[in-house]
Image 1 (cartoon, rainbow, N blue to C red):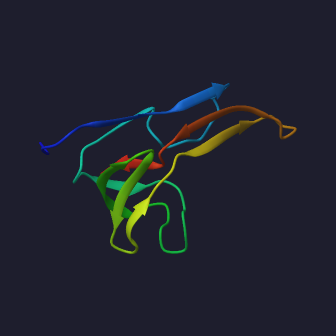
Image 2: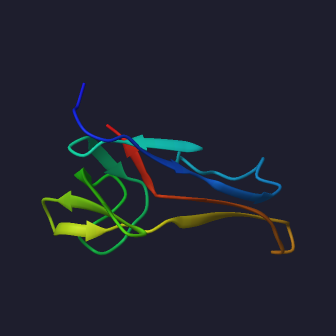
Length: 100
């Protein structure tokens, strides 16, 4: 078990989220030093599947160390559920990472 504080990041769900294809957990628990995998393309070098290490929290920012980029702030992203006509009927917002 890793030493240090445990940080909890809860998803924000709005509307109908039943059809959302979102790999992000409802609740993400992280400790500094834990290994994570990115679930959202952030740049040409930081893509879905990139592996990194949780550094910590600085104010409202969540900081990770990725070998490709160094220390990076990763903000919450929103997955949306839309109707057949394209109208947003629900959303799931979470830090786009999972534990490895």
